[in-house]
Image (cartoon, rainbow, N blue to C red; front, side, top):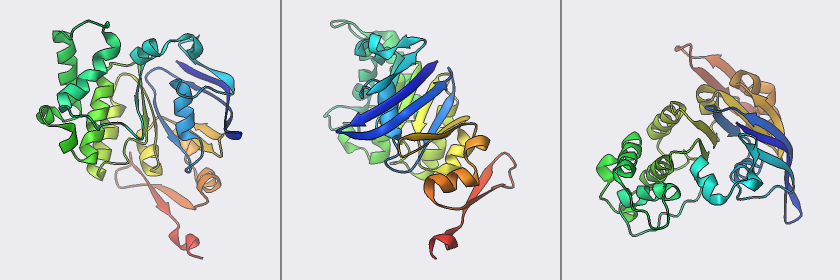
Length: 257
């Protein structure tokens, strides 16, 4: 369980997050929505210790993250940020192998189990056939899939992703969300697409101007009044022909007035 208690973050004198309190249960598939600058990335960074809250605390399994070393944190949480360094002269397989480093001693070699885990991560992301290709030869979307494979190779208890669908074609966005939803671990990710958020995630966190607007199920959070408050757009939700899928319609005419 991840518990966020009264977290406030101030950077360079500016308040980025204000008094955020949340509980994320083990195995939950969690989406964070909000306008640009709402604090989504800062909230994620507060969870994995890149940003230290000005006040408040973050706990992982009842343990304050201030008491967890970065080395130990890397065994618990894997991160796919918005900007990932892939400017390395190495193969896809070599890059994904780096995901095993947190589990190895300084002079400990990779063993059969490590290579099996790497193969499974590549296979999960449909990148097995790319194993010998250089990272520099890949498209932006392909690199993103490799970065996620490296994160999965860490075998984390929690996977954090900051807008991971940005560089992917729609087909791969849908495939990725469906794959991540099926993982037996906690997954927390920020996402811009409200329709994807509604139809894929079981728990939604909505932020605006660094404050928590609402958290809960998609039905509780993604409503016309809340989306109007957050994004200043009017929407209508209705079930598509497939009654398990909710379509979101934007009132474009109101924006053109």
